[in-house]
Image 1 (cartoon, rainbow, N blue to C red):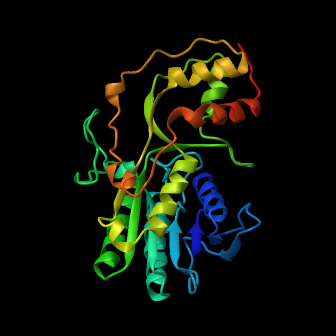
Image 2 (image 1 turned 45 degrees about the vertical axis):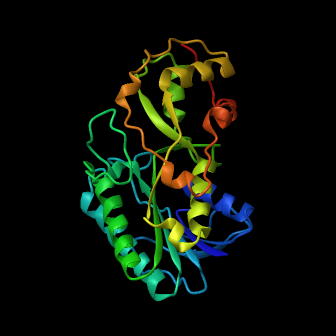
Length: 295
């Protein structure tokens, strides 16, 4: 299958492209510069510019997001209008090109941020009404709605509402917990937090599944993607064991503060996340590349 992927130079997009290539698909990356994948083709694309030529591709995976480095929620920084223009207007142009160029299916990397301000502890399922309380969540919801309009016109679409994503570090990119680890290694106080996470390979497999499934199998077109509930205390305890650094751990957080997403829809397609099995290997890679600075 010939698949076009935006955002391939980012962390999530990098792992999605690697998984699709490893699964035997022909991948074209769309971006301002080529990705790190020598086996992938490349076509220039910028969310601020004209839509790319997508003719000959069967699937479009849209993982690109223009944002302040290291931030998704709040990723607009002090330029909300530019954030909207790039990420919403650019996405709508991209989807229109996919429709006009005969792409059979679009897969959007959306976010749990579309659920917004439900009280802590709410079980989040795809049938809940979205209540985004950030500009990031609003943009993702608007993109989902644009896809649903294309679906009503007969196009196969799927939006993956992903939670936080962890995985092997990508060369040239700071991993998601780099600053947290730096604070821990430096003996600085760490704010308690508990959050839901999914391994990048599991998210990439979710992308592959909804890209190749029969059209009727991806209806309705919304899929939650999540796996672990991870407390910073447990995360840093594992880091301490791997690194030999023993600075104070933060207090344990209340797990009831997390609103967990259900993943029944995705599991019906055969998706089985890896749980904690891959977490230690990921942490070992992160710690080996860090420079612990004990207090």
